[in-house]
Image (cartoon, rainbow, N blue to C red; front, side, top):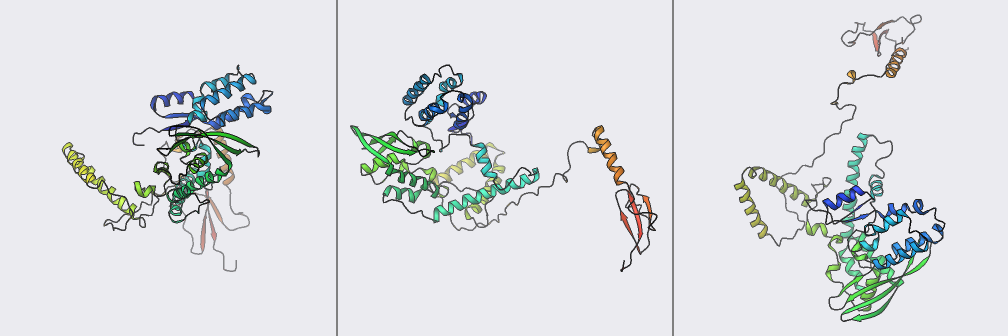
Length: 452
């Protein structure tokens, strides 16, 4: 991260981790995993007589439907008093730390739509189809590399589709066309869902104070059990700056303008959004505009940007090695570098077809040897202490293997114990004889005829 602390971090309810984050990342917004907290509800409150008769629904309503902190605290106080939960230590502890997990307290921070740690889900999706419960360590290393390569291929395909395929607009709103032209296909589909949801919203002007308009937006939401409920959101619209703020905070959390705000824009005949609402993080040309993103799985022979990037990096590494031995050389180098940077300050990054004189060879990677072949660094296996049970099992195994292959009475053959160095001490045999080597015996047998 180049010495930069994260803007936000999600963890489980771990006291030691909470203290460490506050110490190391004092400016980072910390939240608890909401999924882990909600999973404990049946365990902690399931024995309550009214858990399935109103208590669970009241907790979920206070948690997800509250639009302000005051509204949540009012609903929370009412349900604690109604269901007699004032003495519940677990619930009281959660209420005291409500700023770490209740969504309404976390609206002002960008979370990319996440409220859980999502560790198991993301890992399962990442390795899906590559590893299973019987995968060995060597196979895992190879499959991990394949999984990374597949991830890069999927991302490259998505970038190509966003640049070369256009999802048709679902409405005649010019605001939707703005997002269609700028956003990636995946993000534009989220915008379209908000556009479709506009028909479920009823927008009402409540008051006007100067250039600030306040609207109540009633939104119909369908729950998992097909129950439809109406929730009121408040949207503040600044007529002079063409600015807005919605209590649902969908814009701050996920980077798209919500259906409630879109309704207010349409009521005020605003057909084009300010540029600040078209966030850079979702633009389809993000990589081309800001940096040449290089991956070890890119085909450098077909990617001109990657070829040039590789060539420049190699030259810079050589130059840095030469000048780093002297402070004077470093100062001179940095001076020339600043002059070069000022000279190309307005340079835009665009893909081109300029040929690179130096041939770039992709690193195919080192071959991963099997654990049975790699020489270990520990003491030799022969010097380790062998348990008595293992000794007995080894003796039994040797006793069973140490047997004659042919019957002496029926075959004219000679069987003898094999010496330690079998290859050097194999007895000389006739031209028409063949030698059978087993682990413990050498068998000399006349060569059979063609008919036999």
